Length: 274
Image (cartoon, rainbow, N blue to C red; front, side, top):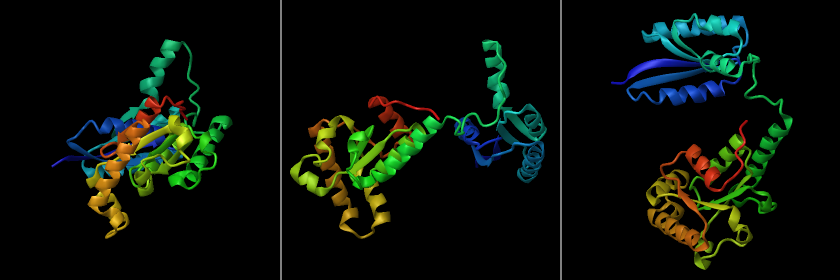
């Protein structure tokens, strides 16, 4: 039976950075089952004491001290949380102090530098990218397709929408997606709207068995969801993509993050960090 522990991600802002770093570290321990709890906006000493109370109560419930991964910028707040009955990993102390020594400069210790809207131009670009992606989902609109940074194509339910949204939200990529349908397989040609945009195209495919399960959840008992139809559509879609020289990825066992990162790299898209 896996050992059970609680991990707290404590931040003075959204907690996204602590979550991402902490979760990446904890996944290295296969024999431990972690209950991951995020405590965002711990931006005062009073809130720090409340966080300590929760952490200590959890340690009593678990019968083992918790793990705290902190991205608290202000030293006085971090010191309070550091008194909790927990292994306290202060990301600012771990990383900022060596950087200060190397650069010969003191860090500002200002709250909220990572995820804020102070850089209005970049923030606006990301929001516009998300809006563009939403309005160009699943072939809803072919208007302004030339403005896309990338256009994902493939059969229905192959993972195009979540990958596009991740590209837009995480990296500010204008990602459209356009489905391949049975009519395209009859002609064995790309949809007319996509033919001038081959250089922007990237395909996603999926194993028929997995596609069958996904479609059955969406439309049980339909021809659309049958294994035979899924096998036909996947086979024809891959043949069409190869014929048209469109690169494609198998999304069956890949996470959205893996798909997006591979597309960014292979399509040589500009990777913005927010």
